[in-house]
Length: 302
Image 1 (cartoon, rainbow, N blue to C red):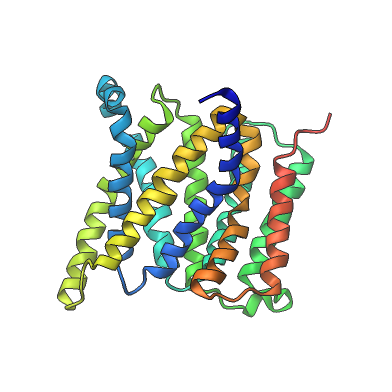
Image 2: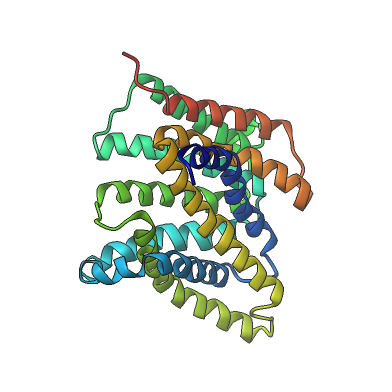
């Protein structure tokens, strides 16, 4: 494949990859009553981890001793990235909308920039501070459904709280990935983290399955298995692989901002597939989030 065609592929992926990520929000909304959240997350990351591991198996074998020495790190990263950002998202999806999930999650890069400035001493200028405030206001606007005057009395959907926790977990996960350097390639590192996530998820899944079996409910149906495979292949393996291609061909700076097309794609898919309603507070809150993210990702003023 020529340089031009690789670049063209990367540019096309800029607009396709957010749709990959949005599939996970649809899975989260479709899973209640079909498959348990921990079983769904376990199957997703078992399959995705295997897909990550196969192409880089030789690398994993070469670095096996270092991976074993750092098992605590991979266990923690797996807990943050696959358990909390996996099962908890599916729990939240039981009582909130796919669009709310996408908009709240869109706050994560802003939080990552803020935490990185405090903890990793990365540059953080005044315009970025304005961006953080705008993005936070946008997320709150969606959560309270635009009713700022009655903020104290607005009842959160329980799912929103789960998604906020998952967003904070993703922030810590991302900052730790930056702080903890690794000789592994991104795909090999994801394979190792997936193993850590599966280990953490396993006891919760056993408990969940036992509860379902005791209640006489089906544990795994063909529909549930289909959702798990969709989550593993599309927002799991395909999205991460596409992201690595884009970063290699276009650079991280150009790719980073496009991630935040996710809420817009999620809105369209949730409306088309799930029949979820779109309201003015979604549009206004989403606009604030996107503007805030743009400001956070702007180059520092000279």
